[in-house]
Each structure stands twice: as C-alpha cells, then as structure tokens.
Image (cartoon, rainbow, N blue to C red; front, side, top):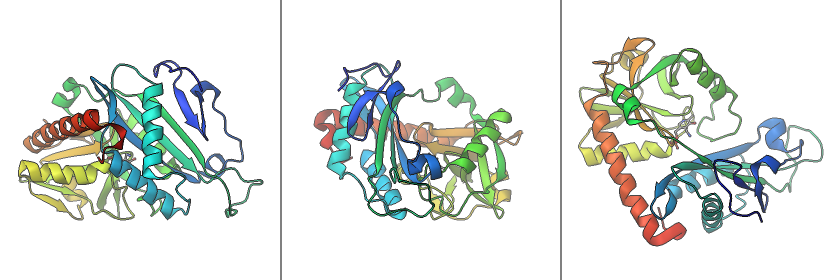
Length: 308
Ligand code: PMP
C-alpha cells in the first residue's frame, strides 16, 4: 500500500487488489481489454466539498456499471458495497484541492492465448483511478460552445458503456479538428448523441432528448435532466428528433459527467436560436447546482454508504 498521494502528480490507483502509483500500474498484453476492447467502464464525477471529494449520483453509476457488465456477460466482480468502499478508498488515497473524477474499468481478464470467443472462468481485470477535473468555466458557459454534426457510424450497442470507443474517439477528434467542443451524431436522419455526451434540443420551451435504447448511451444525466426539467416546470419529451428539428432548435445543450449541462450556441458554424445560452438551459443548470448541493450535503453527513 502506497502512502496517500497527490492526485495531480502520480495518482494512487487500484489494479486487481493492489494500490500503487499510476506510473507503475501494468497489465499483461493478453488482457482482453487491450487485445479486443473487451470491457466496460464508468466515469463518476467527484466534487470538492469541505469534507473532501464526494461523488454525485454514485448509485446510478454503479447500477449502469452492473448493467454494462451484464450485457457483455462479465460477472460483476464486486457488489455495490464493495464498489463503494473501493471508491471511498481511492478518494482517500488521492486527496487534493478541486474537483475530480473516478474512472473505473473492468475487462474480461487475461486469456492464455488470443482468440475472439471468450474462455470460461477468466478473472476480470479491475482498475480504478482518480484524476483531477475542471468543469467548464462560467465564462465558457456564458458564451456557450460550438458543435459540429456527423453521421453516426457506430455499432448498435451504444447502450453498453464499452471501452471499445473507436467510433467515439474519431468523433471527438473530428470536433477538435473543427474547433468544436463536441460532435453531434445523426443516424438515418435522426439525432443520436455526442461523442461523449447526450444531446438535448429545445423548441418553444419544450425539451426533447433522443429515445433511450441501443442507439445511445443512457447518460446518468439523462434521468437527471428529466428530473431537473420536472422541477423547473419544463415540458420533457423522449422522442425521435430529426436533423431538421436539430437545426431549427431554439436551444441545444449537451450533458455529461464532465460538462454537467452545457449550452451549444453554434452548430456547424451557424448560431443556435439567438446564438446565446437560452432560458431552459439556465433553468436546468441552476436546478443541477441545487441537486448537487443537496446530494453532496447528504454524502458529507452519511459517507460512502449513502444511497445516492
Ligand atoms: N453518451 C456517451 C457516448 C458518453 O460517452 C457519455 C459520457 N459518459 C454520455 C452519453 C453521458 O453520460 P453521463 O451523463 O453518464 O456522463
């Protein structure tokens, strides 16, 4: 066991029962995560609080991890209590100022030889690290971000939070090369999602998101946005959204663990609505901050065993 480290320098990470510096963590090349992308992951935001960093919506993240594992037929190596205590320990081992995230990855494990079909009885590889995170600044929120569109060419199991992220990686790079924060994908003329975010459109005060199902990853913020809309008196619809509707939206926003909700004010170089963050975004962002404050307070009172 290493001494508590600084998350900024060389974080203390968890790998298969051991704790040690990230720079020294090693996996065998026949790990099926390396050879086939045969694994799943989670990203849980951690917010700085007076009592240390606290996760947000942890129960939902653990439930999604369990669903992703189930869908690719890996037995969950830990129960929720086990995950919660590992996460609490990772937070403790990486104390520092500011916000952060916990990255969790589980792969099918290390096989004796390379072969696509998976042998029975492998022991999953479990990896966890805490890395610092800077949420979008107030200045960038006030201005909004730009996004570009592209055809969604990914497989049809986007509901699994798989480490096979090549399609998403190429779309993220596409955004960077177009000076955009995100690429918004369309499949068969319908909105799916961003390279690493869910996408929301507003028309006449009504908020809509693409249907949950195999074409998108259900973000932990999907249900949260639904809750925040209800709290804010904003009509919410889960339905197909056409490319034309996307382009005619009054507001567009994205949601993810690392961006919370973020307004998109420029789409393919054209202003979205007025070209400024809209009223529905502002209401949801405020409601998001209130939800966070409530839950982080609960965490500081109850600690890692808390139900949220
Ligand atoms: N879709 C994709 C493809 C993503 O990678 C993410 C980020 N994990 C999301 C949606 C948003 O999910 P969450 O709200 O859980 O961050």
